[in-house]
Amino acid sequence: MKYITVITLIFSLGFLSCKKKQEAVQQEEKKFSTVFDNGKKIQFTSEKSSDAFLTEEVKRSNIIADLAFPAKIAATVIPSDQEGSSNIILFEDPDLAGNYTSLIQHIININQIKNVNIVQKKIELERVKDLNAHGVSTGKDLLEAQTNLSMEETNLANEKAALLESESNLNGGGFQPDMLRKSKAGTAYIICEVPESQMSKIKKGDVCSVEFTSMPGTKFKAKIDGIADIIDNVTRMIKVRINIDNSGSTLKLGMYGMVSFEVNEGDNISVGNSSLITVQGKNYVFLKKSPVLYERVEVFVGPQIKDRVIIYDGLKVGDQVVTKGIIQLKGLSFGY
Figure 1 (cartoon, rainbow, N blue to C red):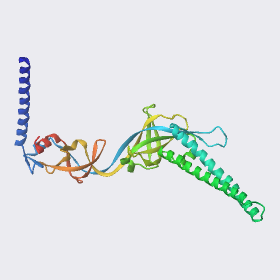
Figure 2 (figure 1 turned 135 degrees about the vertical axis):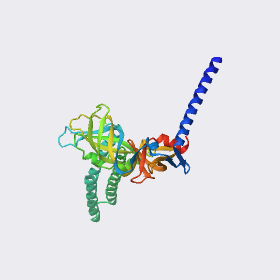
Figure 3 (figure 1 turned 90 degrees about the vertical axis):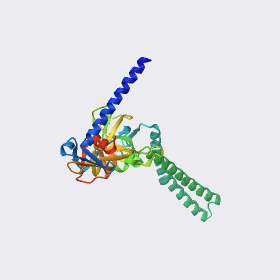
Figure 4 (figure 1 turned 120 degrees about the vertical axis):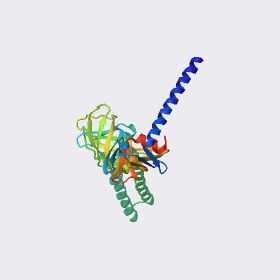
């Protein structure tokens, strides 16, 4: 018990000693500086006292951000062995494969019903009408011909409805049916999900790079082939389809990777993240107003891009922002 008491006493004395030293340093600093305007302004007694603070001039510049999202190869296109047949599309998701197969079958059925069956039933109906007009056929024959035509028209409507369902399912998976039917052999399609908040920064045709987990260090050039029309209600993510050359069959279904986009955030004012301090939820920087005068200003920040933070309001071009010595200025300004 005595041993614990001694340790506690030593710790307390050490803490008090450190506190006194800190207070002594603050008192020493106050000898060479005056803080006024509720801590917003700090004035030093001489230029030498402020030599420890480095600044940079505020400028406008284009900031390039790197956006990266996880992705995987969702489909590949291979040539058919049957001469004259369409290319074969392999899907990583069996549900999408089933929807694409159904879509092709519905298209075949629609063409058969529309261009053959209905045409034939219309011809038969006109023939029966003519025979009925000359008293050769009965009313029953006419009704049967009309019913046969109506049934084919109903079949056509059902096939179109089923086609729309398959198209909707494919769109939900990030694939556009027309694009799939025109796909060239040797193409791979990557699907990544992008947050709704980032959608304004990318568009169809944008170039990107892809690095696969199985091939670290190797980057493939690709481009955005399409953006889905549906945003997930729960995750608020939207599927982006990326077209990549796979003529060498190097890329396989289900391979995981990261897709990177270089996005120009536009002409903005920014500061290094080391210049920014946050106190009670508000963001501040310190400006050098004269060789001995520094001022704390509140700023409204945007996203951080690498080691820079975009400033939406609070600074103007030409301001001198402190980049080194922030902690000392913060202590003087806020008193801690």
